[in-house]
Image (cartoon, rainbow over all chains, first blue to last red; front, top):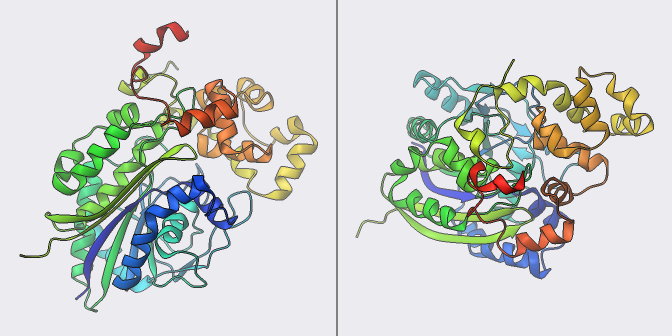
Length: 282
Length: 133
């Protein structure tokens, strides 16, 4: 039986990818950001998950305004890194896990989540930056990836509650898969940031800290936050944080926060990172 | 049609890209999307106005694009992830576009970010921005 063994929350700021790709990781500005992921890279290298489900959003790359799926699950064998206007990131093609992905799709649709199935999709920094942060610079990604793209570009994104419930449905799906696979789930995006309009540059560290605290101890409280509160308090684009609730919903109700990192800024954004693991019984 | 009021319309300095803006801004966003292809970027640069004829745009939207009125583009239905592609076509970094939208220079803006960003204090409601017009 497959099992979800850990959750990872991680920002996906595009400038982080650019800094990595242009060899700026030793510059003080960027070293501050990357140093927060050193322990996590070791952790995941030791964990050796068989599959990573990565909840992310597309930024007008694979999806324009022609088709805007609320939840789109990648069921392909692989995903090419997209050219976002300045050439594709020099990272390996992302291998998929079509078999588990299509099993999840079938299971969650019967669980009343009307998601979209994507059999062909290029992936942008939203997906590849978290992979780079966690797995480092590699010739080949260490495990297959199942991308779950969430619309957080056009308002309204799915509610936090809906995201959390989808996480639960994904967990149920994973646990009904017969092969013994160890699965990690990433929630990406955020934390507080606004990159549009005269209020751009908004950062709310207090909000971010509360969000991270409650992610472990009271995620149900987070599921009740209305969209307007995210946008007002954490910036118009801070609403990406609802994606972390999908990750959270896929974990045990009671989890242990085993790592946290937070820094401001990376470009225009507060960078947050958390690792949640099942609580070890005493 | 007049715009329906929403709770988020009270957030100052913010144009929420909602269903109505998405509908009105389809042309702006699909124009920006086209700039992902180098051949299109090159063609746009040769004759911007002529290139825009390919898209269904209002005269206000055309003007906002040609004059690089970044906030006006958002107000008229553009979305930042799309308009950023126009910024990239102009050779501007994302932070440069952000700085322009906030009415500051790029160094000022970068400095604000290094100092923890724009506080939520005083920036939550339009009632707090009255003096900013």
